Image (cartoon, rainbow, N blue to C red; front, side):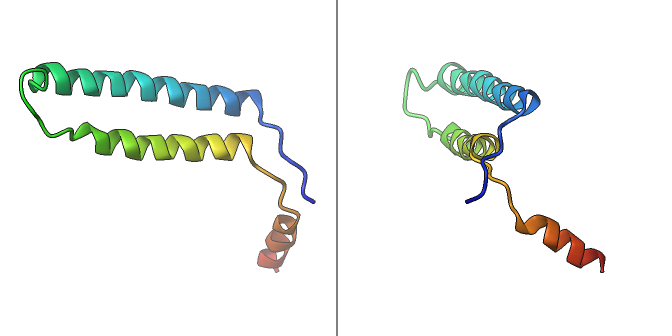
Length: 84
């Protein structure tokens, strides 16, 4: 069974920064939608859901790459074969 790769401090901090930027940007996006476009007065298409959903999927992918990575024992063999 492959060994789990322990995330480095840099990888953890980059993920934390990604999450902070995601939260701040989406709060600003939804505040713009609600207050500037007038969603508090009448129905306005929630266009921000597409941005939030897509970005959330990339955030989930980033989390998975940091916290659920395993060693690939065949990678060294592949690199060796491509050099020949």
